[in-house]
Image (cartoon, rainbow, N blue to C red; front, side):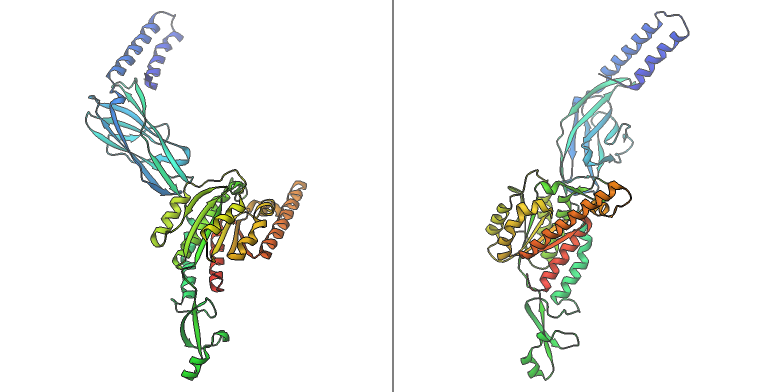
Length: 450
């Protein structure tokens, strides 16, 4: 039995006279009346166990996008149902109030997901709850609590019904805003726009008349002799190349990077954004894209998806990938790459440039990859480090600045070593990593290295 605030208020009314009159049996009589009224209310309340509840949840939603979870509550108790129904979701689901169906449903106090329901026997109502998830992954719904009250609203019965539900939260892909500008550059390189870029790509496209500024190495002397005017070849980037994106899910991917004064997001989230933008761009360019999330074992893999199936497959696969507090097995990464890439390909390693992690893990094996493939190492820079490097106001800030500057020098040394072994390096702040990596891909296309 559950008792409402109304019963407590009635009980308080019986105590007030004691403050002004001699103690007598009035309080006991009044308490007995309130208790009997509560018991009668419980007996007259509809049974919460005879309430049929169904949950309707969309299969998936993008991170920080709004979606509605709906409960369908049907009263089959044989009595009028006056109840408060709570649809429980975890904090990271971002549950909020929704609009009920008609006058029989209204929001209830006490937090999101609560609804006042007044249903005659045999009728049903829809109870919506708005969800704005703040974390990737599978968000599971809790039980549905039904608190059925009697006609006086003094007391009632309560039960929590198991109504399973799951919402898969996909990566946000906020970096898609950079895609149109990169696709425009790709069309220029591919010869589908009015601008022809000289000397780029490796596949012959067509011939046209020479204009000032063209690369003289592109002159076709045989065609020039036939036409009696200078003619140059136009080129387009090669298609159907292999691109393998390796997402490091080891312990360094759990580090949070962000602006000063904020908790930031895990490095892995920025890496996922960069991987999605690169995959979208490479897919439009006609290249075959594969993805591998790895630390000491394969956490996610996408292969064989192309065209309109590529991005949904990547989003679905990356939705549940989380950092693992283990050192990444870079020798295992090399084995995975060699197993999947038998021809020369672009291998993008989304990891960290932390000197200790690189020197003990990636650096000893990167030359093995660079011998057979074009390798790009992409890493997220921490904005907090830049802030520490600029501080000079106090003694503590000077020490912090010195430590940050030393860290920068160590990362520069590591970057130099990676480039010496044949890898290209891209390092940028979380919001800039995705477009910078896309630009690096286009530059490799233009230079004929892919």
